[in-house]
Length: 87
Image (cartoon, rainbow, N blue to C red; front, side, top):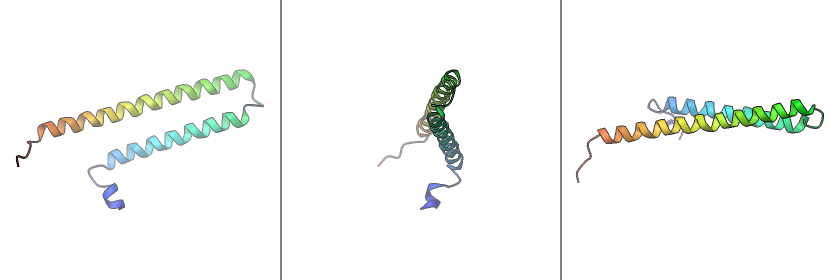
């Protein structure tokens, strides 16, 4: 099953998906840290943590959307160039 999941044609795409997964795990760890330490952190530090989390999350969403839109447009262009088979 793994051979069909990762091959020469899609190894770049799988690497990008892995990096996105790592970024999401880092964001989750940061959220958990902030929530766990929220009771002892000064208010301004806590505010900056939540501001950073929101900016990081927004950038992560926009980056993922950009990457997958670019991949989708590449697939559309590739399918438009290929001649359709007539049955």
